[in-house]
Length: 288
Image: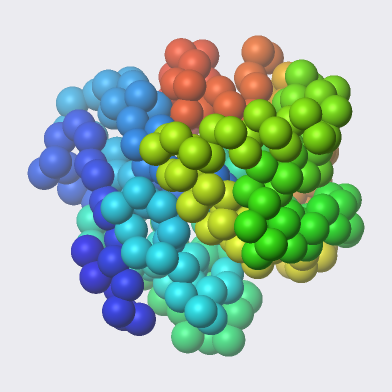
Protein backbone atom coordinates (compact mmCIF):
# COMPACT_ATOMS: atom_id res chain seq x y z
CA UNK A 1 0.00 0.00 0.00
CA UNK A 2 1.10 3.59 -0.71
CA UNK A 3 1.79 6.24 1.93
CA UNK A 4 1.07 9.97 1.77
CA UNK A 5 4.78 10.80 1.45
CA UNK A 6 5.25 8.55 -1.57
CA UNK A 7 6.51 5.53 0.33
CA UNK A 8 5.30 1.94 0.28
CA UNK A 9 4.26 -0.40 3.10
CA UNK A 10 4.05 -4.16 2.82
CA UNK A 11 1.03 -5.48 4.73
CA UNK A 12 0.22 -9.16 5.36
CA UNK A 13 -3.01 -10.45 6.88
CA UNK A 14 -3.77 -13.74 8.62
CA UNK A 15 -7.03 -15.40 9.59
CA UNK A 16 -10.36 -14.28 8.13
CA UNK A 17 -9.36 -11.71 5.51
CA UNK A 18 -12.92 -10.35 5.43
CA UNK A 19 -13.09 -9.80 9.19
CA UNK A 20 -14.65 -6.46 10.22
CA UNK A 21 -12.57 -3.78 11.91
CA UNK A 22 -13.71 -4.64 15.43
CA UNK A 23 -12.33 -8.17 14.86
CA UNK A 24 -8.98 -7.12 13.41
CA UNK A 25 -5.73 -6.63 15.35
CA UNK A 26 -2.90 -4.59 13.84
CA UNK A 27 0.52 -5.75 15.06
CA UNK A 28 3.40 -3.24 15.10
CA UNK A 29 6.78 -4.95 15.46
CA UNK A 30 10.03 -4.01 17.11
CA UNK A 31 13.37 -2.77 15.83
CA UNK A 32 15.55 -4.91 13.53
CA UNK A 33 12.67 -7.35 12.83
CA UNK A 34 10.66 -7.85 9.65
CA UNK A 35 6.97 -8.68 9.42
CA UNK A 36 7.95 -12.17 8.25
CA UNK A 37 9.53 -12.86 11.65
CA UNK A 38 6.12 -12.17 13.22
CA UNK A 39 4.38 -14.69 10.97
CA UNK A 40 4.27 -17.51 13.60
CA UNK A 41 2.88 -15.07 16.17
CA UNK A 42 0.28 -13.64 13.79
CA UNK A 43 -0.86 -17.12 12.70
CA UNK A 44 -1.08 -18.36 16.27
CA UNK A 45 -2.87 -15.20 17.45
CA UNK A 46 -5.44 -15.37 14.65
CA UNK A 47 -6.14 -19.00 15.60
CA UNK A 48 -6.42 -18.16 19.31
CA UNK A 49 -8.81 -15.30 18.56
CA UNK A 50 -11.09 -17.71 16.71
CA UNK A 51 -13.28 -17.68 13.63
CA UNK A 52 -14.08 -14.31 12.11
CA UNK A 53 -10.87 -12.63 13.33
CA UNK A 54 -7.89 -11.31 11.39
CA UNK A 55 -4.38 -10.20 12.35
CA UNK A 56 -2.59 -7.63 10.19
CA UNK A 57 1.20 -7.13 10.25
CA UNK A 58 3.22 -4.63 8.26
CA UNK A 59 6.88 -4.02 7.55
CA UNK A 60 7.89 -0.71 9.03
CA UNK A 61 10.08 1.54 6.88
CA UNK A 62 13.49 0.22 5.87
CA UNK A 63 12.73 -3.50 5.97
CA UNK A 64 10.97 -6.35 4.20
CA UNK A 65 8.47 -5.26 1.57
CA UNK A 66 8.36 -1.61 2.63
CA UNK A 67 10.34 1.30 1.20
CA UNK A 68 13.37 2.91 2.81
CA UNK A 69 13.18 5.39 5.65
CA UNK A 70 12.75 8.90 4.17
CA UNK A 71 15.48 11.53 4.72
CA UNK A 72 13.29 13.33 7.25
CA UNK A 73 12.45 10.11 9.11
CA UNK A 74 11.16 10.62 12.67
CA UNK A 75 8.56 9.23 15.04
CA UNK A 76 6.03 11.27 13.06
CA UNK A 77 6.76 8.97 10.09
CA UNK A 78 5.91 5.92 12.18
CA UNK A 79 2.70 7.53 13.46
CA UNK A 80 1.57 8.43 9.93
CA UNK A 81 2.29 4.87 8.76
CA UNK A 82 0.25 3.33 11.58
CA UNK A 83 -2.60 5.68 10.71
CA UNK A 84 -2.37 4.68 7.04
CA UNK A 85 -2.51 0.94 7.80
CA UNK A 86 -5.40 1.39 10.23
CA UNK A 87 -7.37 3.20 7.53
CA UNK A 88 -6.46 0.59 4.93
CA UNK A 89 -7.39 -2.45 7.04
CA UNK A 90 -10.09 -0.87 9.20
CA UNK A 91 -8.53 -2.55 12.28
CA UNK A 92 -9.96 -1.34 15.59
CA UNK A 93 -7.38 -3.07 17.81
CA UNK A 94 -3.66 -2.29 18.19
CA UNK A 95 -0.78 -4.35 19.55
CA UNK A 96 2.84 -3.21 19.79
CA UNK A 97 5.96 -5.16 20.73
CA UNK A 98 9.15 -3.53 22.03
CA UNK A 99 9.84 -0.43 19.93
CA UNK A 100 6.52 -1.13 18.23
CA UNK A 101 4.99 -0.56 21.65
CA UNK A 102 6.51 2.93 21.74
CA UNK A 103 5.20 3.56 18.22
CA UNK A 104 1.59 2.60 18.99
CA UNK A 105 1.49 4.51 22.29
CA UNK A 106 2.80 7.65 20.59
CA UNK A 107 0.43 7.09 17.67
CA UNK A 108 -2.66 6.84 19.88
CA UNK A 109 -1.56 9.97 21.73
CA UNK A 110 -1.31 11.76 18.40
CA UNK A 111 -4.72 10.51 17.27
CA UNK A 112 -6.16 11.91 20.49
CA UNK A 113 -4.47 15.27 19.92
CA UNK A 114 -2.24 14.84 22.98
CA UNK A 115 1.10 14.74 21.18
CA UNK A 116 2.82 15.86 18.01
CA UNK A 117 2.15 18.84 15.74
CA UNK A 118 -1.56 18.19 15.27
CA UNK A 119 -1.29 16.70 11.78
CA UNK A 120 -2.19 13.19 13.00
CA UNK A 121 -5.21 14.08 15.11
CA UNK A 122 -8.02 11.68 14.21
CA UNK A 123 -10.27 10.46 17.05
CA UNK A 124 -11.76 7.86 14.70
CA UNK A 125 -8.40 6.03 14.74
CA UNK A 126 -8.23 5.68 18.53
CA UNK A 127 -8.46 1.87 18.95
CA UNK A 128 -11.17 0.02 20.83
CA UNK A 129 -8.41 -1.93 22.55
CA UNK A 130 -4.69 -1.24 22.85
CA UNK A 131 -2.00 -3.56 24.22
CA UNK A 132 1.79 -3.40 24.36
CA UNK A 133 4.40 -5.98 25.42
CA UNK A 134 7.80 -4.86 26.73
CA UNK A 135 7.35 -1.29 25.42
CA UNK A 136 10.70 0.39 24.68
CA UNK A 137 10.30 3.96 25.90
CA UNK A 138 12.94 6.14 27.52
CA UNK A 139 11.08 7.09 30.71
CA UNK A 140 12.89 9.75 32.75
CA UNK A 141 16.22 8.80 31.15
CA UNK A 142 15.92 5.19 32.36
CA UNK A 143 17.47 3.94 29.13
CA UNK A 144 21.02 4.90 28.23
CA UNK A 145 20.80 5.52 24.49
CA UNK A 146 24.30 6.95 24.07
CA UNK A 147 25.54 3.73 22.43
CA UNK A 148 23.29 4.33 19.42
CA UNK A 149 25.36 7.28 18.22
CA UNK A 150 28.44 5.06 18.20
CA UNK A 151 26.46 2.39 16.36
CA UNK A 152 25.51 4.90 13.65
CA UNK A 153 29.14 6.08 13.42
CA UNK A 154 30.36 2.52 12.83
CA UNK A 155 27.72 1.94 10.14
CA UNK A 156 28.65 5.16 8.34
CA UNK A 157 32.32 4.15 8.54
CA UNK A 158 31.51 0.85 6.82
CA UNK A 159 31.95 -1.39 9.87
CA UNK A 160 28.64 -3.29 10.23
CA UNK A 161 30.19 -5.93 12.47
CA UNK A 162 31.42 -3.36 14.93
CA UNK A 163 28.05 -1.61 14.76
CA UNK A 164 26.25 -4.84 15.66
CA UNK A 165 28.68 -5.46 18.51
CA UNK A 166 27.97 -1.99 19.88
CA UNK A 167 24.25 -2.60 19.48
CA UNK A 168 24.25 -5.92 21.37
CA UNK A 169 26.31 -4.52 24.20
CA UNK A 170 24.17 -1.40 24.42
CA UNK A 171 20.88 -3.25 24.49
CA UNK A 172 22.11 -5.64 27.20
CA UNK A 173 19.27 -8.00 26.34
CA UNK A 174 21.26 -11.07 25.33
CA UNK A 175 23.35 -12.28 28.26
CA UNK A 176 25.52 -14.62 26.18
CA UNK A 177 26.43 -12.01 23.59
CA UNK A 178 27.01 -9.34 26.22
CA UNK A 179 29.82 -11.48 27.67
CA UNK A 180 31.59 -11.99 24.33
CA UNK A 181 34.61 -9.66 23.92
CA UNK A 182 33.63 -6.83 21.57
CA UNK A 183 36.41 -7.44 18.96
CA UNK A 184 35.45 -11.13 18.66
CA UNK A 185 31.75 -10.37 18.37
CA UNK A 186 32.46 -7.70 15.74
CA UNK A 187 34.46 -10.22 13.69
CA UNK A 188 31.74 -12.86 13.87
CA UNK A 189 29.01 -10.44 12.89
CA UNK A 190 31.07 -8.84 10.13
CA UNK A 191 31.58 -12.29 8.59
CA UNK A 192 27.85 -12.85 8.72
CA UNK A 193 27.18 -9.68 6.73
CA UNK A 194 28.94 -11.21 3.72
CA UNK A 195 26.15 -13.76 3.31
CA UNK A 196 22.75 -12.93 1.73
CA UNK A 197 21.20 -13.15 5.19
CA UNK A 198 23.93 -10.91 6.53
CA UNK A 199 23.39 -8.28 3.86
CA UNK A 200 19.72 -8.16 4.84
CA UNK A 201 20.83 -7.87 8.46
CA UNK A 202 23.06 -4.91 7.56
CA UNK A 203 20.03 -3.12 6.09
CA UNK A 204 18.02 -3.84 9.21
CA UNK A 205 20.82 -2.53 11.43
CA UNK A 206 20.83 0.73 9.52
CA UNK A 207 17.07 1.26 9.66
CA UNK A 208 16.72 -0.18 13.15
CA UNK A 209 19.32 2.14 14.62
CA UNK A 210 17.65 5.11 12.96
CA UNK A 211 14.30 4.30 14.52
CA UNK A 212 15.85 3.64 17.92
CA UNK A 213 17.44 7.07 17.80
CA UNK A 214 14.10 8.63 16.84
CA UNK A 215 12.26 6.87 19.66
CA UNK A 216 14.72 6.53 22.51
CA UNK A 217 16.88 9.64 22.46
CA UNK A 218 13.82 11.61 23.50
CA UNK A 219 13.42 11.36 27.26
CA UNK A 220 9.73 11.14 28.17
CA UNK A 221 7.69 11.26 31.34
CA UNK A 222 5.03 8.78 32.35
CA UNK A 223 2.67 11.74 32.73
CA UNK A 224 3.02 12.30 28.98
CA UNK A 225 1.03 9.09 28.49
CA UNK A 226 -1.59 9.64 31.20
CA UNK A 227 -4.27 10.47 28.63
CA UNK A 228 -4.14 7.10 26.88
CA UNK A 229 -7.41 5.11 26.71
CA UNK A 230 -8.48 3.58 30.01
CA UNK A 231 -8.66 0.07 28.59
CA UNK A 232 -4.96 -0.01 27.63
CA UNK A 233 -3.17 -3.26 28.56
CA UNK A 234 0.50 -3.05 29.56
CA UNK A 235 2.39 -6.35 29.43
CA UNK A 236 5.92 -7.48 30.22
CA UNK A 237 7.90 -10.68 30.36
CA UNK A 238 9.01 -11.76 33.81
CA UNK A 239 12.28 -12.95 32.25
CA UNK A 240 12.79 -9.88 30.06
CA UNK A 241 15.29 -7.24 31.09
CA UNK A 242 14.03 -5.50 34.25
CA UNK A 243 13.86 -2.21 32.31
CA UNK A 244 10.83 -3.49 30.39
CA UNK A 245 8.93 -4.53 33.51
CA UNK A 246 9.67 -1.24 35.26
CA UNK A 247 8.63 0.79 32.22
CA UNK A 248 5.35 -1.13 31.77
CA UNK A 249 4.51 -0.81 35.46
CA UNK A 250 5.17 2.94 35.48
CA UNK A 251 3.01 3.47 32.41
CA UNK A 252 0.23 1.39 33.95
CA UNK A 253 0.35 3.49 37.11
CA UNK A 254 0.00 6.67 35.04
CA UNK A 255 -2.90 5.54 32.83
CA UNK A 256 -6.10 5.43 34.83
CA UNK A 257 -8.17 2.30 34.20
CA UNK A 258 -5.33 0.46 32.46
CA UNK A 259 -4.23 -3.06 33.36
CA UNK A 260 -0.81 -4.64 33.82
CA UNK A 261 0.12 -8.29 33.46
CA UNK A 262 3.42 -10.15 33.54
CA UNK A 263 4.03 -13.32 31.57
CA UNK A 264 5.71 -15.70 34.10
CA UNK A 265 8.04 -17.33 31.58
CA UNK A 266 8.02 -14.45 29.11
CA UNK A 267 11.21 -13.25 27.44
CA UNK A 268 11.58 -10.17 25.28
CA UNK A 269 11.50 -12.40 22.20
CA UNK A 270 8.45 -14.41 23.30
CA UNK A 271 6.17 -12.45 20.96
CA UNK A 272 7.79 -13.36 17.61
CA UNK A 273 8.45 -16.83 19.04
CA UNK A 274 4.67 -17.21 19.52
CA UNK A 275 4.91 -18.62 23.04
CA UNK A 276 1.49 -20.19 23.70
CA UNK A 277 1.01 -18.78 27.20
CA UNK A 278 1.59 -15.23 25.97
CA UNK A 279 -0.41 -15.56 22.75
CA UNK A 280 -3.41 -16.90 24.63
CA UNK A 281 -3.26 -14.02 27.09
CA UNK A 282 -3.12 -11.44 24.29
CA UNK A 283 -5.99 -13.14 22.45
CA UNK A 284 -8.12 -13.21 25.58
CA UNK A 285 -7.64 -9.47 26.05
CA UNK A 286 -8.75 -8.57 22.53
CA UNK A 287 -11.48 -11.18 22.26
CA UNK A 288 -13.09 -11.02 25.70
